Length: 413
Image 1: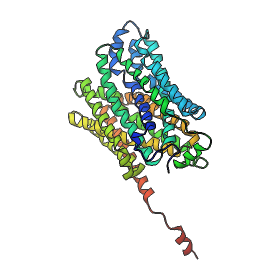
Image 2: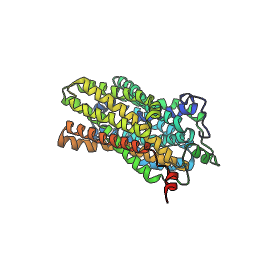
Image 3: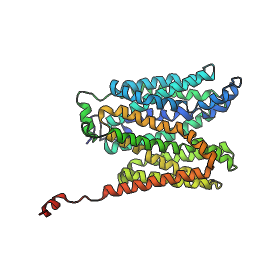
Image 4: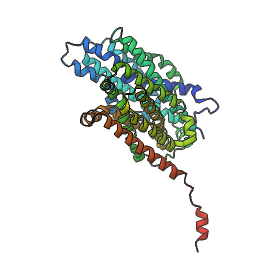
């Protein structure tokens, strides 16, 4: 069955609502990494600030911290006031706070603007997740989730390349990239509408396979969010630790890191484009098993990174695996969530992902200091291998034929 607003005759990537949601999703990747090429220049510009060393390094993770804190409240507001108002307000706040670094007078104010940017991202992501559940169901929802991950990967590549070019001209210029969101506002304003609450929401929930009355959702959602948080935390070893690991291997850190992350994003984007078809063949449990297995293999190759092709191959496998499992988290969450709770569920899942990103350096730095890079990478590979095996076993159990209860009853004396 399809949701009330769904047009099953048109490919999902051609639907205006899907395009609007993909545009919103592409903004998420801007939040953190876009200004990374600016950091050395900003540190030099504010060299007179005694806290410049610390503040410049907080500029990148600051939006993640704000998302973690704001996303649950944004989810509650999304359920209470509607998806469209929160999405539009988040886009407007993004346009105001993102480019603010172009003209703010000191690092303290720039850091504050980055925190506000994180609040905007929380509003956009929670409203957008709820709208995906409202507008699409079944295979079309899965296809859109894969397209979102692909948009983030390819968008990330484009934004980072553009930011690097602009930062070579002036360190503040990459902040202008956030202003591109102003081009999205008119289209989203015109296209995005809330599903009516006078019975339409319930019909949409039934169409999406969600039982609003009896399906247990809270504890399963928390467990799913916990797994997503751990997955994101380990995955973020890539942008936070690979630059330093590449240096220890004797590579020119900046160029190898750029090549590594480029391969990771490209492979992730291509895999996400195929996610919907792959899911049709192997299902969610098979997708988890394949995705975690690819990540296990990728992290297992990193300790042999003194061979450049093995290091890049590891990044490609990790990117593909992460792109495989990421859509499944939201697909399952939307399937479990009652329609009137999709906002808060989106907030929980958003907080979990960004909490994993934010916590990653705090977990990985002491572990690497104590054991070294190679044991940490092997531990990550082992953990993902266990998850892949558990997912495979779960999928096998789900496919096991059920006994014919009617025959069993007739056989009883």
